[in-house]
Length: 316
Image (tube, rainbow, N blue to C red; front, side, top):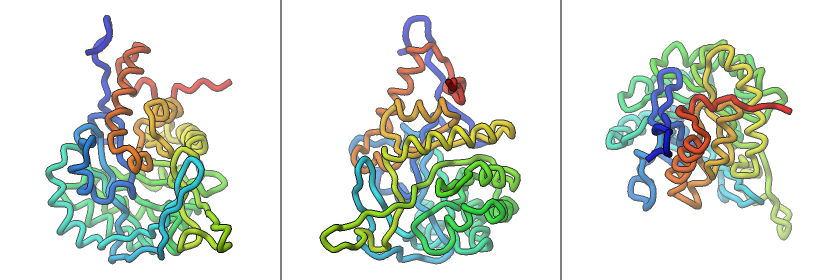
């Protein structure tokens, strides 16, 4: 029940046609294709607004050499390399099993060429189980594609424009933090037809084994995620929000969220929704805890709609 004199706050959000029961999204790459979490204690997909599936390419990929994961202070590095069974296998074999989900499903697509992005996006856009398509132009742990497109405004715009032509669902552009000016990439994606922007993906990083004097990860470098990246992510969400709000393009914020207060920081900075990922590795019940904390904050501060909190940052 809400507090005295305060009605139950509205948590439902609509991101350019992607309507969700609350602003929480599960981040791509931390959830596989969702099936693993169906029977995990403490996790209920009806507690969240949407799940984002693992990044998928046109052809199957084996991924990077092992080790693929390494710990770091207040975070972790991953170098999976977009291992996946290929778009056709996912659409044919996996998506039908997700119909039991009581939440929105977002596909995450990747490719080595603009044409590959286009083909994969069309396959998912045509699938009835998919509610939105996220274009991964920001993955830092593959040798070709991904971040190569996401670090250049012209290339980023070309990918989004090509996908836009075949995508019937809300289109999300996922941005990389590994750039000098993330707003230039954001502007290019908006102009090319992105409905929503999501950021940030992981930061390119390295961990060294001092005994062997070699990188811990088999691919040498990987993507840093977890609480360590949160301040960087919040700053970039704030920067992109200044550009996106003029075009009525909502922002999904992510990077190190593990508490309700973390999520609130992103919302205040300008995120209409937020994504949780690394925290699921140590606490599968974190989603319910974050939504509960968010609801309590709204009640305590007499805010009847979470959307009213978006972009309310007061600079010094």
